[in-house]
Length: 92
Image (cartoon, rainbow, N blue to C red; front, side, top):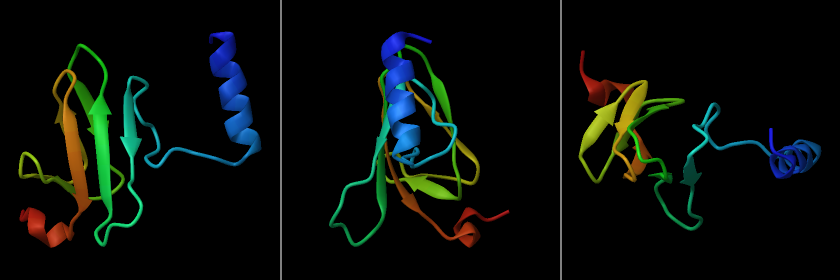
């Protein structure tokens, strides 16, 4: 692990700061804007390749209108705008 990563990880652990989504892929970022009525998560894939994002609960990509129970596929340099959904919206 590069020295800067070790320092950052140590500071985050000491401050008890963790990711919004556990197991987040290393070359993506996730943000949750403040002040919105609906919880929205914006995910950006910085990689040149496709990435799979594991979801903590059922969500829907509102840009691509894609609901997902456990995971979503992210295009290279892709962006997802996710909202939480009721599992009943997924069907069987």
